[in-house]
Image (cartoon, rainbow, N blue to C red; front, side, top):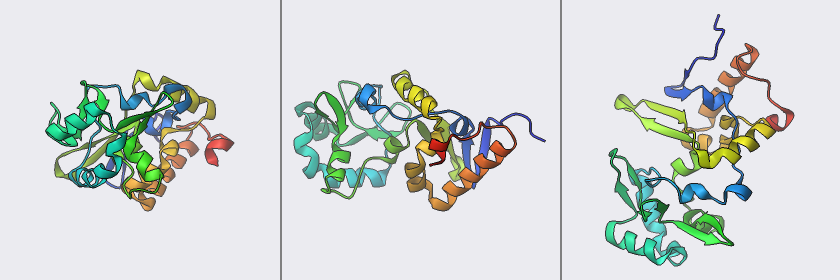
Length: 209
């Protein structure tokens, strides 16, 4: 019988870091002000399909972008290949995503803003929606999911702990969008089984809701 939580779990061909089930997280936008859009040294990971969809949105969001962001896009496009050979969104000044816009001192994603206003059908790269989960593609089509710890998200960790909201429940919608409802329900079943074995803490009433 397993007596400790395995570091890696497998759910229908997807490798899962177990801290996605055990750690707590809930974005606290009122405190962070969207800082994840303007910190870091590379853009958000994107797929070729997403690049095409972003390009289709450009005319709609162009007016919300800074002059510096517009210049970067004119020069190198909406994405580039980073030093690790990953496709990522273009950035300004070595850190700010080109699609960052501001309202009342808060950082917003121009792509998501347009989507929520009903102006486009594309929200934002799935990598943005999945954060703090990072996806890694391996040879042979194998996919791995890791929980990425970043100090700018410390308020999200504090809020998640207060709500006792595990990462995988906080990210229900983007995980379902990425892998499908059946897969997500299987993930929840794995977590429930580990909980029944005493390897995960019981869910709070608010998390169950």
